Length: 298
Image (cartoon, rainbow, N blue to C red; front, top):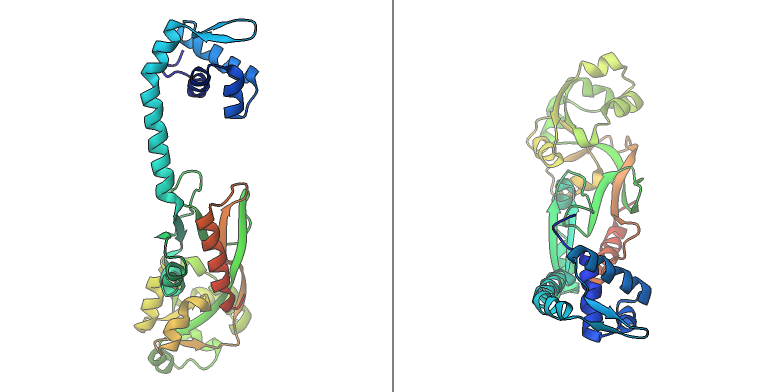
């Protein structure tokens, strides 16, 4: 027998002894009187004592039952108080996690708009390349870069992925990049999150596998590092255009062969558990970010 009493039965017992009725306890807990009786019998079996004397139309707490109720009531109140405090703490908050590059290059410039629109909300933003586990991690909603199919998740497309090329203006001029085939003279910054170089080079530069393998390449596992490397003239970046947009506007990067953009089967999706009701503040955040994302070309 486990050392911990059946907690569901404790709840039923506390309600029954406060109301002095299995029927009233059943109404309070939205179950049947029979279910209350079963839970209390389970607790009595665990304790080895009778907590109620059963009569034809009523129940009466025993002396052991009254003494036990007095002992456990403060502990149950503590559990309730702690739970309500924690619930209140997060009732006005939203916990979201997203890829670091998306957070830095798109979301960071917009998140203050949400707080201005909803000043009573606490926003907790986590950036991680790891996939959030809604059953384990403290997260309400997430943005993922993936194919969009996930069992038990509701996925809403924010931005469809594309593979486009960018580099620093000086690098383009120094290498002499005027057509896709010129890339054989360059260094590829291979962002492992957007690793579509073979497909792009085969489609737009007409290169075969041996030619592609002969090109210099640096593997980078963070998009933000790949972008900075391109800005400093270390090679050609392949990225979702959305992530390079700000640096292009500032003249730090230039699009290479803008007509040669590869459609890819990934994208940025807003995801949350399919069968869980979203709290009010989380719904506000979901609606807000979907509205913000309307200025991105899907």
